Image 1 (cartoon, rainbow, N blue to C red):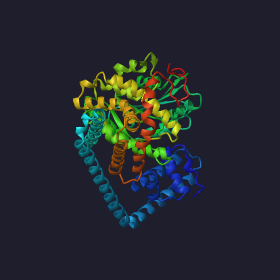
Image 2 (image 1 turned 30 degrees about the vertical axis):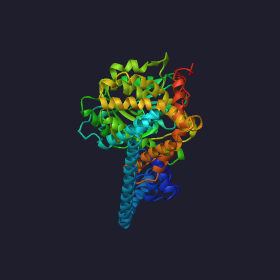
Image 3 (image 1 turned 90 degrees about the vertical axis):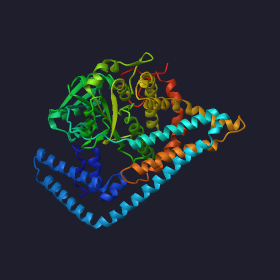
Length: 527
């Protein structure tokens, strides 16, 4: 089996090829794969069978001498299904025991989380009289506690959009810049989503690439009439590419998928159901980390992504006020974005072009007059930075766009639901004062002020870290010990990311991506 070459077939998406490689070359079982990638055993088996079916179909269509590859793929598929059935019969008792253990672990985590939140609330209530001796720290602690608890409460109330049976015309816009290795597979994966053939089109925009990105796009378009390619002779920036893609289609719904993201087969159909509500102008999908077990940093991000979407975006969705539709996977009503398209494409901040933060900025354009919601079951899988340097540059870019867009959203959010507005303003203020509180509590008061209790502050950080980590353990499709990395991330945040906010504000005029060697927008600089 090790010599089978179909594993490297470029027509398959990266996830399917990796799955077949681990199965055929390394002989890994479904249970082992489920443990490694964090998925369900049945889902692993289904995706592997789908990959085999795709190989068979491709071999029949394109192979000149197709007897051998088809026979090999057919035999592997038949053996795979037979083995799966036998394994299912043998593993039934073990699966039941694993299911019971999973339930017990979830219940333990849920109990601990409930006790933790109750203890924090009781502690804050018991020491509320400290507001006369240390009003700043006490008020800050109460606000943080209230903000976090309400996020959890609202996320528990949240329910995903119901299937309304609608199937509007959808255009997926995918810009690309020097992505010759991935863009072809990304475009083909979009064509495989479960959506009516005649109602889906793909607009691929080459943003002045200097490699073979354009050729890869054109190769896909040559075999598929649903794909159109737009070519920029020079690099104009992602926002200009997105705007060109929007103008090139008359589809009712415009969707965006990052070129390093992969959609679940039913993700697009689920996401567009939100537009059955006439007042909804944009929908945000859920994003899981694709390379979650690559490094310790990707593990931490896996928990962070899950909680950020399932807690923060779910809580905002209750009021139709999601403040950022992630670029990983989102969709907009054409009617909602066209009036602001020219402004958005040419947006400037402090006199310089806004070259990043496209998703948050476009969301703000829609949020002014429409509802913006989140769908937890419309799932994409996205690759995240695996090194410290890449991650910190990404976070700095995001914080700069957050600075700019927070000023804009503050100008109209007060007209929305009062609870949603209050939550948004609190969410903007807390990161701004958090570094000051940390220095005052952990350094100034004990060393200069002759008092203070840094241990209490550290325990507060620990409580917040445990709360987010346990939430991941409880709400994840199956119990996963990755939740420990969620705890670690909170301390990582206070060690590195907390202080990055001020630097991002002071350098907010920078137009450089930091991770994208493009020429659009100039060389950047904070002057």
